[in-house]
Picture 1 (cartoon, rainbow, N blue to C red):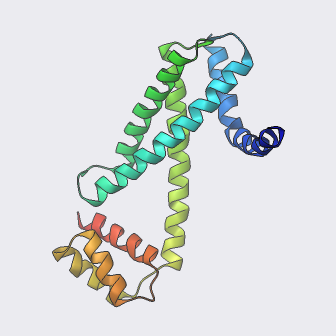
Picture 2 (cartoon, rainbow, N blue to C red):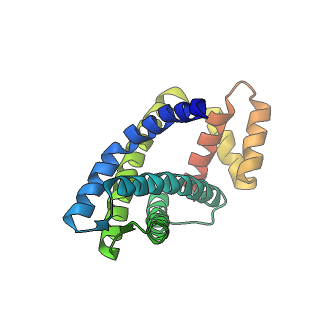
Picture 3 (cartoon, rainbow, N blue to C red):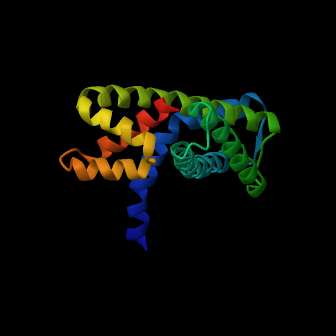
Amino acid sequence: MLKQLFSLFPILLIFASLFFPFILIDLLIINLMDGSYSKLMYLILFLVVFYIADLILNIFIDSLLKVMADFNFLKMNGNFISAIFDLLGSFIVISLLDSIFQTVNLSIGIKILIVFIHTLLVFLIHNFQTEIDQGADNTDNKLPSTVEYEIRYLLQKENLVTCIDLIKQKYPDIPKKTIIKTVRKMNNEHK
């Protein structure tokens, strides 16, 4: 039992260091807006559970939105829709946790402000990461123009999955991840 407890300690330490800036911001918001809580430890536990649950929900929502975008269900800006779903998901999570945790009582204004700040920070981090990824994609994973032309031609006749499979069969030396990124990019440009 003691070994299991100490094996969880490094994991909890990593989570705490990752969420520390968010916790400080949220503690400041809650204290400035007179949120009520019985002990600081319960509030920190509440915030850590909120971040973990929200992270899991956002991973699921982002994956679902990518699938929907691949099949052309969404015609609007993907970042805008992702931000709306992130706001709604975060608000649902924080409201549910506020009702479960009896020692923490947050007003609707505090919840909205925390969710808005959290979504804004996640959105900025995501955009920064996307810019870095696109820069790396442009330099590292550039396909020959003949392959790109063939992808454009196939996208006019076939769906995404079939196009990826056909290109992978024809060019087995090209990494599948590169093919998928290029096909998605060209499909989004084609819309």
